[in-house]
Image 1 (cartoon, one colour):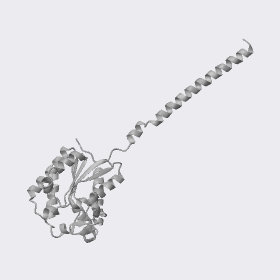
Image 2: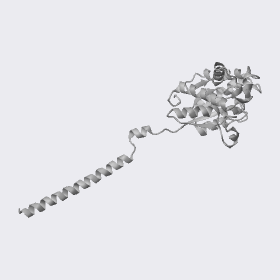
Image 3: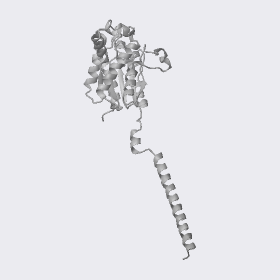
Image 4: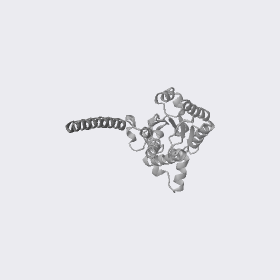
Length: 266
């Protein structure tokens, strides 16, 4: 073979090799690009979970009356110690909690079962909450003197319906109020203690009790404070009162559940 032919063959081989290398390189680049566009298993695991749905029931205190901005409640506003507590919990854990406010101003558990019959089971079905917070204020039962037997039956029914819907139940007593500490200083604690008693009698790993009322009383006594700076009127705490109650509840929730989401135990 002449020198010219040998040089031509070598040039041809180099060109072919370069073309193959280019094709292979382009193929690898395409594969790498496709892989980088797909989330890895670790990324999928780290993706934020859907918010936990928290449904609250109670009266005007649970709605957050007299907390900051409460005048806009007719437009869908809700606030108060419950919202404050779960907002803090969302901010300090990896779980996000969304509040579905189903409190009714002026109502009690008896009226929820009679005057507003059907609403509670409808809410459970439509919202499908992972958590149901029951926080009746006591005053709406102390004023009309709800028979304690009926009161206990209504609370028990609310708990059982929530459990049947596979929701965790949190029984939360309300913040202190002037009326609860003065005019109804015997009646309100009586109702609230029965509410806690009913919840504990269920003996379910999905029912928890949080006594904010007595914790708030103890806090004020320990710090030599009167209730007056925390009250908006006789029946409702002001923003400072809701803030303190929310902080106490948040601390209780953090102590009980840590950084773990509040989940139903099947």
